[in-house]
Amino acid sequence: MARRLTPVSWNSLVRRLHHLGFQGPYRGGKHYFVTKGDLRLTIPNPHAEDIGVPLLKEILARGHISREEWLKWHD
Image 1: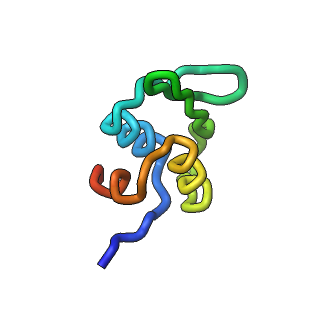
Image 2: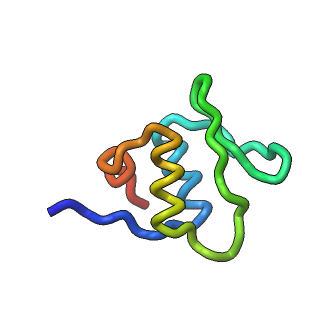
């Protein structure tokens, strides 16, 4: 049975992106971003609330990260 995506904290998002080869986060204008090669991926500002599944799916799609790749890195 496939595991489901769940909301994640900002710190968890950044930590998992590091495991996937991204560097940062860097401050750029109003938003933070991480980089991997030529790819620059904007991530939401670190607020108190978790990042919901719809936004997480959008971030993964823009970062060319598969669901399986994301789920193998759990905290």
